[in-house]
Image (tube, rainbow, N blue to C red; front, side):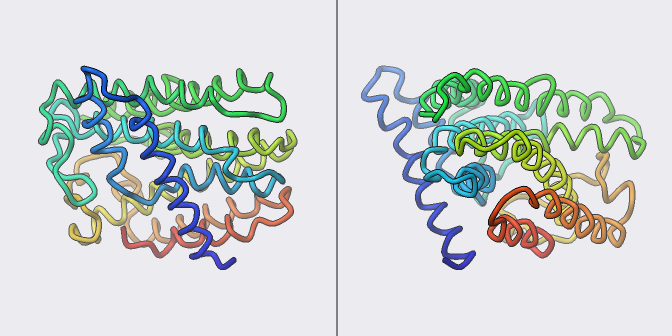
Length: 291
């Protein structure tokens, strides 16, 4: 199957699974929170993170759908982080993925709770995974928690806030982005290997690939904030001008080369897998993406 066909098939599978999560909760009196959570969860997007989980599971030899609970859990956590990022107390954004942000539709209080619900419910979804070695579910939940929490994405957000009023060094920017963006890309890759019953070497390869891909992905985001089209991106551009981004640190030309370099190094980490062609094409597609 060609890359685009496989990617489309993955996205369709992921969308169906995500749509089923809150639909299965029934007609509870707190139903408005399901609607607020679904507003952002089902708003589309690249589905990069869940796609990575499914593909790593596949190349380790199992049906990729075995990784769906992990894939969905990571996407739920990613979505909660976007809802909270958009709040007035954080980035105060009005649009996300081409439509009004969650708090603009449901109010700030409900948006906070929608994010809280997505984060909490994500762990219940992840715990449903049926692993070849059931004892590894604890390892998987720990990885998910560490990548999302104060040692991972939240830690990166904290470092970002702490450095908001000053220019950061190269190492500080790397520390922020490797946590803020990178760790939530590491999670689905490693969880996909666990769902696929992969080896320790494959887990290490997946983590290395994800860490480098996360940096390439974030640098490309920083580039697009400067040169991108708001209509294509589905959100405002030019909002990161005073933030500690890679573009501010290195300039546009150097950042374009960094994306290529990090992507090449990420691909090199895939040598421990038998058929990394899909992941290779996925990584390369980040270099030229427009949104």
